[in-house]
Image 1 (cartoon, rainbow, N blue to C red):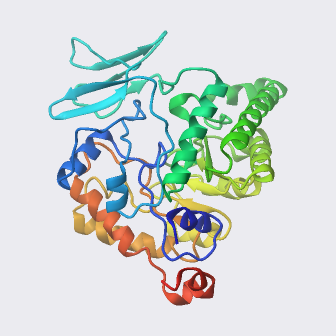
Image 2 (image 1 turned 60 degrees about the horizontal axis):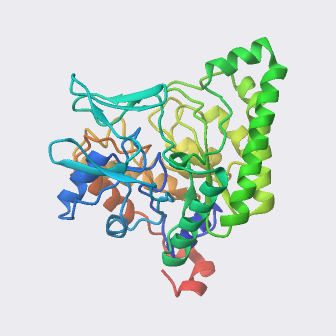
Image 3 (image 1 turned 180 degrees about the horizontal axis):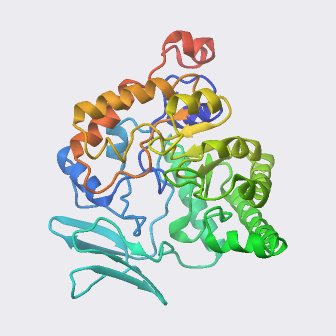
Amino acid sequence: MTSRERVIRAINHKPVDRVPIDLGSHMSTGISMFAYWNLREHLGLSTDKIWIPDMVQGLAYVDLDILERFHCDCILLEPPFPGMASWNPRGKFTFTIPAEANPQRTEAGEWSISKGDASMRMLAGGYFFDGAWLSDWGNGTEEDRVALYAQEAERIFKETDYATNLVGYSHGLGFASYGAGSIDDAILAGDDPKALHELREQSVTNSIQRMGKVIDSAGQYIQLVTMGDDMGTQNGPMCSPRYIEEFCMPYYKRFCDFVHANSDIKVFLHNCGSIKELIPMLINAGIDVLNPVQISANNMDPQKLKDDFGDDICFWGGGCDTQRVLATGTPGAVTDHVRHLMRIFKKNSGFVFNQVHNIMGNVPPENIAAMLDTAYKESFYDAVHVGEDLSNKTGGC
């Protein structure tokens, strides 16, 4: 079974030979550039060609040698930037970044990036930027950007077996969120609900038009498309589920229905926090994949999530608690933790392994290796689970 087949079947809740594994195919399933540098050094791999597709979070592009080393099944769909430059934020760390970003050192030893009237900064010794979310480093028209992604998607499809996800943030090709956590939108819902619906209508219309262009040019090459719309805090939803049901779900459904009616692409929703009570709405709206599955949040018990929703939505994440285990535990503790979670989530397919959100810059490389190695060891299904469906295609597992 190829990686792409494995991912597609897992999303569709069909039997697979093993759980697919992801590291870095999305801007919320990746690894800090600092942690990635240390991981490559730890593994005895070159550190001189690390490039950064997400300057805000400081995420590294995960190279083929790492994907192969940890048996990963997905790869980031992110075309190179029009211009690239070298950046040494401190010490041994040197990265390739979009030249347009052009970080500047301040007198306080911070790094600052400005674009128009917006700016963001990285504190001295920090791991990421804060302030405005400056993530669009692409050039050209929307048609140019669609063509750029289509070219890269075709290359990945024809030259590799990896699954890909159209995220599109770094070249300004993302798809609309519906403001579940927007204070301004929540206020507008109370003051003038008709006006908010009109804004939502325009937003989903634009997203559908843009997605139509993507399907026409790259629909046969990509397996997923991302919508990003955080709805949860650590303790519960950001706002009333009634608000989300009225002002978000109809527009999610419109987008999902369009994607499903016109392609085989699955809709991947990035949605952080404690959102268990919202998951039935997301399923009804047509969301196929939920990420990052924040098991550290309130009311997000892994076993209950799998029992209640595992047959209806694919969990992409939840495989390791990045808040309380990955950064602070020993490699042995990480191993035990991942083994436990894999045995919960892998049941009956419908799961792609990934840690909860991105790996932060200070996570020890030994812990990262322990997490991914354990995920692979625990990923396999026995012949009873796989059955004739796969053994006829692949000669058994």
